[in-house]
Image (cartoon, rainbow, N blue to C red):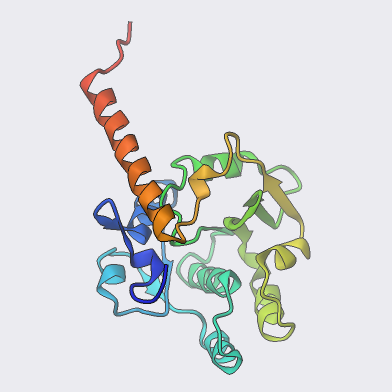
Length: 208
């Protein structure tokens, strides 16, 4: 959407897009971290959650290439943070910071799709940055990024036992907001959702 405010910090309905993501994910997980290389931005600090940057060696590689290394760098940062903070947790859930309509039952539905033998990676079909990742992949991921030049989430996931969840009802909950037109449409969608919520509160269903 042009230069200026980073996309996750753009306002939607009075809150940043990343704030919407955090609000929707918090009830679904035992802990949460936001990966950002702008640790001092007020919009991120206002989230009141841990903030971590991309790993230093990954940032150095990005500087050499003159570009960011994409979602895999954030996934790696999340894995390393989880291993330090929750060493007994075997999985992390990942989502982009600019998908403000994430489903509130995302974790339940993803975990319900895990079967024996469990996949190393379980993602939403066509939305590969949204998924569950085994932290045992941390060394392979680091090597893939730094030694092999892998930048595609789908490419890395395909190297391992990768399963996909077809989201019933379509992928609208995972919509990225990339243009002013999409932001305007998201504002209208949010207004409609809040209106439905108020109507439900005003006219509760009978339990009889």
